[in-house]
Image (cartoon, rainbow, N blue to C red):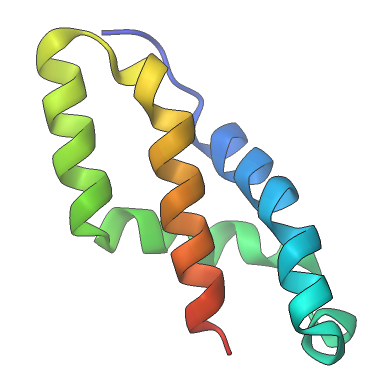
Length: 84
């Protein structure tokens, strides 16, 4: 299985998703520091069935590194929307 720095992937996903979230919810984005969301976002991944199933399947074929960015972005996007 490929080595994955999951925390860095989550940090990247937050950075990618934050501008759209901030544009859609500027008042909330003004009072929430994006960097403080890293640990709660990591916990959300641990609890997300889609992420867990995808990672198990990817690990079985040795492709976890290739699929992690996409699934992390989807889960983080979904999680950010639940904040509102």
